[in-house]
Length: 172
Image (cartoon, rainbow, N blue to C red; front, side, top):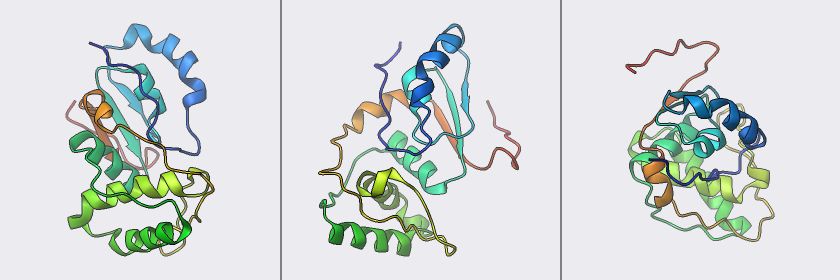
């Protein structure tokens, strides 16, 4: 049974939402086949197409952490005020914990908040790997019902990797 198509919970540069109508028409007879998105990003295509299975790959490990958290848990445990000071504090904490695997769920949620509040939803890191996008000008972060995504993305396999250099081998 097909869930209601969802828009991306992220504002993502390079989104493929512009291609939804064309790809939907081409893909609809194959909806029972696994949809492979080699640059998952904001997930606009698989969220709109609602295939039975998805393999999503992206080179951004924090983006993949976000999708795993959304699929496996999706409970937002904290709120960030929409002001420059709160944003900068969160960005500093994120950079401090960015490689701490014990902070997986927190880091995935912080990733969403940073994306929601940063300038134009950009993801950029400096040469040290630290997220460095400045605070944006949105009046507030979008209200997202993360639970709505849970059923839709249960059959998503998400992998951190570069499709150009890493062979894609999965058990499916």
